[in-house]
Image (cartoon, rainbow, N blue to C red):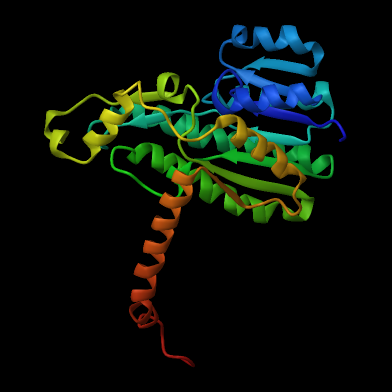
Length: 280
């Protein structure tokens, strides 16, 4: 297998870490970003020059362009760009602070958009490549208590689905990945809570808060298996548009899409009734 070079945001934990470890172990090169450079010291010590590390907070748009440009300049061709950095924000919409809302959108949505925009000129110039956009089961199905997290993930899925059509003529493939729960440290390190409002104790949103606060809960998904599937997807041609990972993801997305389609089909006559008659 030919050596590939990958650019992955957020390699200090979660799927970014799992992917980086597997890629370096098999002999690929990784350009990884972290918010704290020390978080990659162990990987750097083990793999040396095959790991290129840069400090990046994806809410810093100028920083994204600086890091992406430098990675391509110093490493030459980058075959795959993985937009992974992000976190979850839990709480009813009314409970969240304005600052939390802005930071969630700037991290998960704007940061992901700008990473892709920064990489595209380089991918076009080199004649192609792949983009893997990490989403979640929450990019297709919505649950109470996750309104802002869903806003960012539904938003980035719409962005990515449009971009995959825009860049197809340049031999650039785009894949959206929708994992369910996985045994990463997401719940402990990448999940934030909005301030609790007592009025919402009777709301279904309170259930999401209880789940987030339960640090003993164990997810079904194996992050190592999921990371391998993401890596292997680069060998598929054409690039898969979406990959759902985990039985919980498949089941929740299936319910959401089936329900949405049934509701749409029930409105067929209503939708067609708003057209001008043919010929007018």
